[in-house]
Length: 264
Image (cartoon, rainbow, N blue to C red; front, side):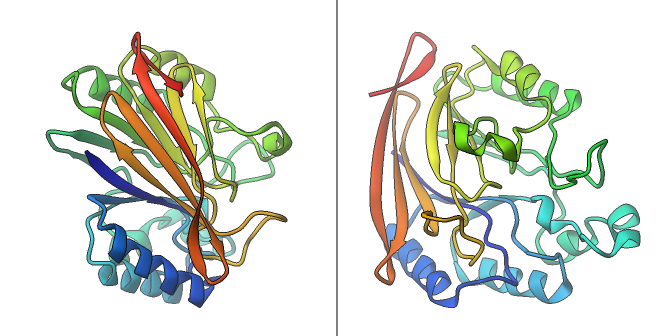
């Protein structure tokens, strides 16, 4: 059985230091096979914030898989945003913007859904391109049937009704139509700072909230998820910061049947 810890939206520059320390302690006790980080390492993509994020990644002493979010692009340094948008990411985090990893038990496919600009006022919104959709579909369909398939993106493929104003990822409908019946098991993301799990077209869509920052929505605590299981059964345990520690708040169990996932 594989164990993942899914964290997101750390936002170095707006860190709650006690929560960060609690996260590190929790990771040590869980001993996951892999930590998955679905974007927004930084708040303003400054050098100092990237250095702090790099220190965290070095300190956790656990394999991690990471993709960027919209906050990892500079907001106010326009020349940097358009001409050298990922220079700090390459220097302090890793060369890849779209990492990929596979072993006998699972495959992780990361995509960069953040964009330098768009035909809308809110440049924090994300998109998945036709090229990305084709790549993901091909990778999943060519994988062994027994291998758990996970897609990691920053922007949401599903939102609870009360948060739909935050916008789904652009290209979502085309992407889900292409992914359906390919064997894709989970889509992990963040961005909205709300944690939830939902089956959409036979695929589990699981979000983590902001794990360590003070950028909290009303009535939503810092959070992260623990995902355990294999190609047939998965549990997703959502943990919230409460009384100076991360505590289990909800567990959902999913089983795979007739080519798709269902909540038990």
